[in-house]
Length: 164
Image (cartoon, rainbow, N blue to C red; front, side, top):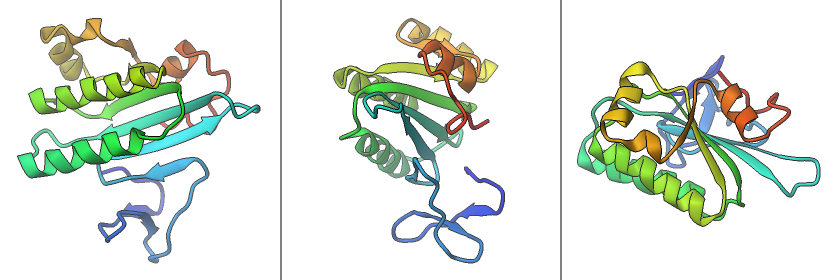
């Protein structure tokens, strides 16, 4: 699960981040959507170019019903976002079956439809091998780290969304 210092993710009706005291945590530009992903966003000074980091943290195995919820939540979170730069951070993912690979392709298609730019980053050696076995590395630009991915996208300042 995604967590920060003194921040725990609690399953309540709104799936919001809360402090251990029970008070909501609001980070500027950060949206905690579920226990499996978070989107951090930042705009340039003019507000015309947005940079979004979608941080996934997925279990090795997930049942069909849970996958459907993850799929709907992730794709729903992308709806209405402006075009711009998207980095999908896969540091919290060790394995992907065919359904999760399909989700990544769906994310790619949705971002492409928004005329955005997409870079995947922080793939484990195991995950990279899965991508190679499925010939999916041809569909994506892949960076080793989040900072490298942001630099590849032309993002100069990574202070807000640098993360890991």
